Image (cartoon, rainbow, N blue to C red; front, side):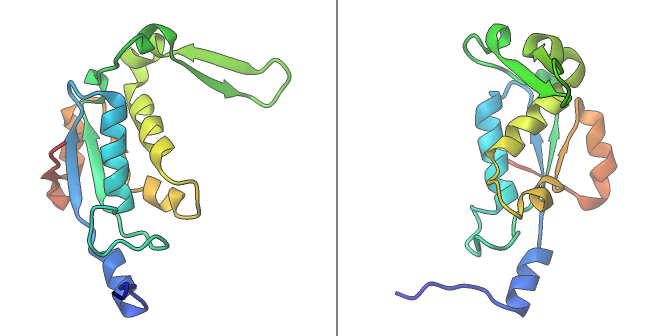
Length: 149
């Protein structure tokens, strides 16, 4: 059996035919939500998936502040960043980060699931994460469809 690989004009049409989806993160487990959204951003669920083309869809995640963590992650998980200077390591426990920057937590989890290649930045631009449902109003013109998890 031969493998179908889109080329030229067909590949360009695949890039343009992107849909918009909305995901409600309220009560969802962070890791399971991140894997499902990453698959949609990559486009792996489409029959026309091509590894070297960006054929994924746009995803809007709402209610990020109501995300759920399992196990002891609320007490043990820590995010790190470094300024580049000696002694510039910053440690922020997730317990302190959730009330104010839950959108950053969800975004980092989803982007961490994307493959580390040249298409990553383009796929990351197709992700929007909002703390509450008000963020969906900005994308009313795109008419996003609900994505069942």
